[in-house]
Figure 1: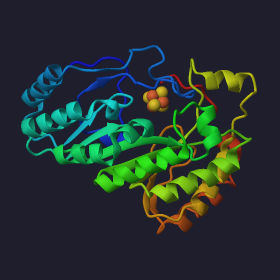
Figure 2 (figure 1 turned 120 degrees about the vertical axis):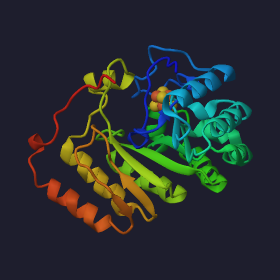
Figure 3 (figure 1 turned 60 degrees about the horizontal axis):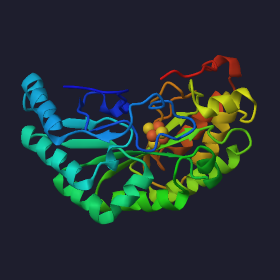
Length: 291
Ligand code: SF4
């Protein structure tokens, strides 16, 4: 198999076959993200190359691959017909395939409309990981996410209506001290409107070479400390009314929170309350991310 550029995958895809259908990210402007700042530019790979990689993977792993992840920043941006062809080909080569997953941002999902998403389901796409980041429109503008809460809600509804599993990522602390409360409340509002299957928490860490790191250094953006992040998390959880699987399986987080809402809400809030009795120095230290 051939890989080009940085290869990222969600922790839940640790055991999956990774085959690139696209390279890079067509947006590449989020102010917190360093992944593709140094390139490569976004492009869709030739279908013959993708098929060749799938066939080579079958020679190496045999026919019994169950989960496939197509890594790159926004593989959902691939033309619908081409992505359908990749899904069909993957199922032909791996007849026991149970899951095909991609990353996708709301603007690119939105362009597919419900009809396009249904076509993808018919050919075997089963799960999309989406960076919601925040439900607060001011924050979405500041981080140059290229979308707003209404579009994120529409995109989320269509993904679910098409029958695709939806995993939404929230970045704790991405509003800084100034917008922490509205970040929590507005993100809860949007999550409540979408009711994703999975809600995944990450904590903002400034990354090398990003505009947001410059804002942190120039004090235009004041980061939250561990206690502030935990209070923001508690406020978010308090306002969530939906059924969703909550995970925070990531090295950036101060606390690992796992559970099913609403069943585990009180337990998770109690875990946060206990953590708030610890000294801030007992949590992971501040660091600048380089990946
Ligand atoms: S966060 Fe996602 S959409 Fe934004 S630039 Fe990075 S890869 Fe692209």
